[in-house]
Length: 189
Ligand SMILES: Cc1cc2nc3c(=O)[nH]c(=O)nc-3n(C[C@H](O)[C@H](O)[C@H](O)COP(=O)(O)OP(=O)(O)OC[C@H]3O[C@@H](n4cnc5c(N)ncnc54)[C@H](O)[C@@H]3O)c2cc1C
Image (cartoon, rainbow, N blue to C red; front, top):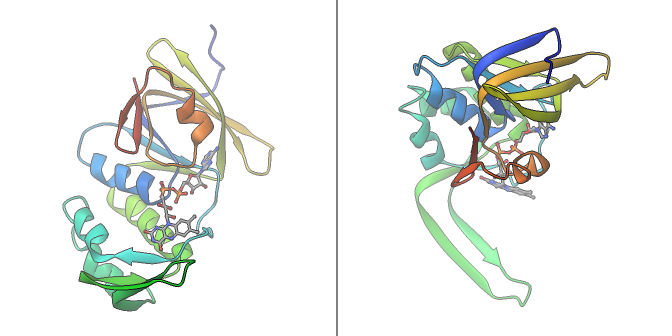
């Protein structure tokens, strides 16, 4: 097939700049690979969530983004907790405590905090406001088609690898018949 004229090339395209996509971008830092991170939203963006962030999620990112836990504590408004209560529809009530603290913070702010770290600390090129509308396998990788959210312009990406580290882009990962699933990451060769 013939390629469109204007195509941005990268070693890896990450689809979705939520916590999973940003974690992937931070983890790929220093790999020597050129990475693009594409999201349909412009940030900060809202996300339906209970807004709880467990400390171990931040600690697990420390090897890829040194000081992230301290910066989170310093920069984001939050309420910390050490225990939770679960009340079932039948009225049964369970109370349990956590070995490490958890924090309630707005996802709008937390996700933007992560994306800013990606932009500041890595060479990842962030394309926010670009909705992935289609992809095709081509020689040498995957051609991913996007459209800007205002619908005016389209940008295409040719990536040797495409990562879908999210539960949200089901139509995309669901059709990657021969992709490999590693936990919640879909890697399309
Ligand atoms: C009601 C509710 C409450 C929850 N409460 C909690 C909680 O308290 N604590 C907790 O840890 N987890 C909670 N979760 C789960 C948590 O929200 C998810 O696990 C987390 O958001 C997953 O992160 P992600 O990066 O995979 O996906 P997301 O955060 O959903 O990010 C996916 C990204 O992909 C982008 N995207 C989607 N389609 C396209 C497209 N076509 N093109 C380009 N970009 C696209 C979106 O704009 C988005 O930014 C809750 C979930 C729900 C629904």
